[in-house]
Image (tube, rainbow, N blue to C red):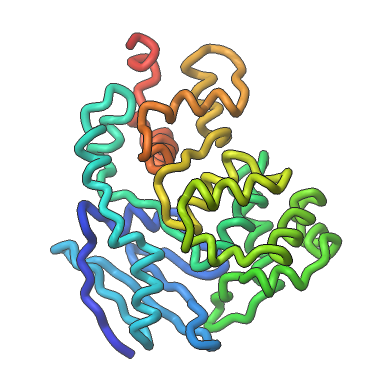
Length: 284
């Protein structure tokens, strides 16, 4: 077991970033993240905690496992420019100032991020996470109660009918199996965001919201927003005083340009924190 002291580039809060971060592969509690990774064909448990001076201490059995944690937490992806540009934004500024250390937690594999995106289409987050947990637990080995993140090879062994039995809707189950059998999803981290998105949307069940989830949580990219997210739909409906369609939420994200994905995360967090001033936005 080794212990590494890591310092994030730019503002970072492990406690903020790991809130609601538990799933079948990891547990986040009391400011500590405990996660399992498949390294060299074996499962390894790693833990991360943040000291008062901002240093993130990672305990893991190997350097590769430490690097996996570094990616999961997004420690090298400095978002200082986002904070500086939008700290006085009339809509998002209060949230950025209060939660400036927030970064989206990433999945251990792109495959898990795609599974999460497909599970989450047009249902509640709680229900989506239940289905995701069920699929992951049925498909991968475990260590100390935590299951390895799925890979294309693992998910490709399922039939759509088997995934439907686990709760994943028919067309979405078929889409997941097709993609895992025809594409090495993990290699999408090696190509540009635009190229990865273009490949994903060739599948009929993959739309802008799903691409946003994969980019944020699978690829670790901030450019693609969560267009059509149910939380953003509700927010925009409140702002406009009428029912809105999912595609209209792109207008919320347009002002944030290459930071649209991160802006999505902050908007949803701001809704939970009460820092989104809808009346002020309407008056602007």
